Length: 256
Length: 284
Image (tube, rainbow over all chains, first blue to last red):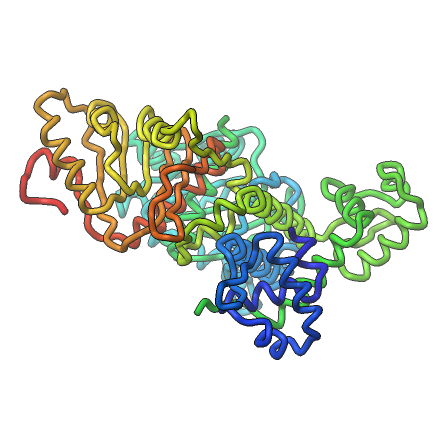
């Protein structure tokens, strides 16, 4: 269907045009400034696929299927545009360790802001991240990196708001958490069921966080070097729901 | 009038980009070869049946259009190419679902303000099930089965099911969670049934939430840990009792949960099991 719509100069434009309102062939001819034969051929092709219909008043209208195809196509186009807009973020980082299923699911972040370090705010992404963690109660993290400052801020928030941390990490990172001098917080939060953690051997190189207030993504330059200078950030309510679903889907996938 | 809210200037770039990729089988094959790892022209030649010169020609075109890049004679996909390919394949899944159900969907009313309909790829493996002359109540039975035997259940249901005794007693007697958006009359009928049934039951479940369909949603679906069932109204406004789309795939279930979240936000009035058990006055 993608090919059917994309290779024709007129079919896609006719479909998009009829999505907005029903029209007669005369109206379409005048809008497109094309010969009626071309318009008729395009309309007949769309009609034979069930994407449009000819009504009793001789107007052409989009069908339910045509409407859904247009919605899905519009979504694909928006996704392409967002990928292009955040091109540098995607190209600067390695996606190799992220399974395709999860790469697709991460598309809810496509419309997010890229927050970058700059010469006057060198730690801008980290500062914004920590500022938002301090406002968060329910926190879910895929953690392939360790930083004491991250963990301490998370503990403070959970204690302050009587919150909860759901954590996916590796044995190595867990060792570092436990060996740090704030391990007593971690242990007591685990004991009080304020922290649930899942240990995996093979974690994707994504430092992903989703909370009740924001979601963020940091990536790696390559297989080993973490990039703290760029972060995708979003605090839209619908995106947060998607982010929670992504986390749960990832957890289900790795704990299967 | 519907408005196509998109960047019209981007439409041509978008169309050209996709056309360039899908108009050529060899370019798609090359991208397929590079999808998981980098490869040289010789390696691509070995993996495909194309000649060295055709591969070279198309590699150059892909490079010029910035779909791939070259380091030390090995070719790599840009990350954005990979992401776009994933989404194109995803669109094809949506298209497969739409193509296979075109007649059923074209006879159905659609709710046009729902974001979840923008990506139907999760419905790829959905099956259309219709009643026939030897299974007149097939759809009613599917609904009955999907309304029982679950850990959690969410959805929008348009009528008081003829086998409601079995269904509602299952909800009350089992440890499961139920969140249903129902027409006001149906919600009252369910509440009354539960009140009448309570004295006979050793109530295990308090996790029942009935939400009034106060925005006249003309669409029905059930999503549970077991399945997704979608049902539509005819264009005439009547509920179509003779056909449903069903799927048991995890992706379809996730899609159904997202759909429910969207509808739940739109509805206001609800009644909890506790309201039914402890108070005559609370609730809807």
